[in-house]
Length: 162
Image (cartoon, rainbow, N blue to C red; front, top):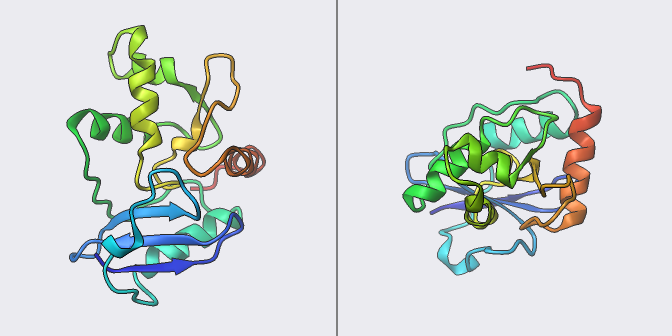
């Protein structure tokens, strides 16, 4: 799996691609559940330029949705959760319980939803940062709560353009 590292306002981001040029991973520095860097393939500068361009537009306030080809790999339940994350509108937050309900799961499934959410391999683009605790508190984020706060603040002040 080739990869590259790009700069962003929240630190370096490691972009991992599949052999057919789909986005397989987008990881922050010191992210929880970060795969060992040795498992990525060669570093290839300029890999997936559309991902880098869309992230630049997002951080500049000119993009609210992404349309890069994704390659999500996980358990069937993780895939269900990660695909549901893509339905959370820009600038909004859902609770773990709300996400579980959206998936048709019982209220007790919020913990399992949270665990799957925390293992999301494509941060920012698959917006796991938009999920909060039942009281609206920021209860955790694989990239750290400071980054989650930064991403949510960015989205609350950026008008939805496209």
